[in-house]
Length: 417
Image (cartoon, rainbow, N blue to C red):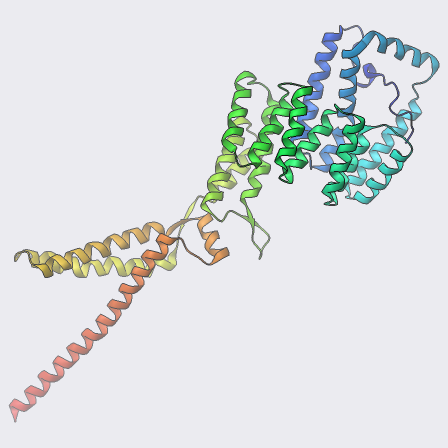
């Protein structure tokens, strides 16, 4: 990679800008294009393929905006001079693009060690390009070497203190490793550089979400959208960040490798997150994740509880029917006891039937842990006890009937003698 890669760049040609436009209009166009690309980057900074496609433009946008803001007239003079003196070399620019394309391809095939090696070689040749540090950070992240990833970000910000994308990487990576104070520090610097920047606001929301303060994140999103309802890039960025967060609500099935929701808390959190994502930005992806979350709230009857439910309901009739019949002869303690037991058994049967319609998150919880919900265990226990009671009552009743018949038969034989 050439050492002159960061020499003067023809931004008019690179971004197809009309040189006859006023500086304010050019800056407006650049910020609009930058915002679109930055939103795409912040949606999922760990999508290597996506990052590889847009990384090159992000740094160029920042440099172009700084150049036009500082002194456009000076830039135009230097640009014209560079063309006259042949300092803008198409060969050098092509070599730089080819080098970055090479790094992109390495990231795509997860050749992270190759990316690290090439970036370090380029830096050792005193190449001053902040993107090299970005590639180093992404490669080290891929190698699960977060310490080196943060070192790369620190080095980038040492040489390029106000590089927006480096600060975004720092905030995002810090959030991912739960270094929330560090992430907030990066975000504070982002807001200093660009107050009310939608990318920085989206990153702030992402931090709040990972800190478990979804309510504050949702409030911040709503406040921004009230003022900027047509910012579809911000909507998409925040929605996709929420989708990323919703993945933390799932657990892996060790047998099949599929992802499940297996607790009420995780289900309610996932449903709230995915609902908000679909609310602020509706596309096939947000609709799909919302429907997937809703699936785990659908119920299915637990047929294993059918016997205990039937025992409780049928058993209640054995107490209620005689109790009501005897009640006509006048109230007495025995009748009251029978009716009370019958009502309790009937209520227990109805409640067991209700709790037997279990949502899929509850079924998954039982599948993974082997433990039922407390209410279901309670009514199953009552059903099992009463089923045991009825079984032995029936056996004892049969024995008593058999004994009575035996005694009657013996008495009949004695009388005939």
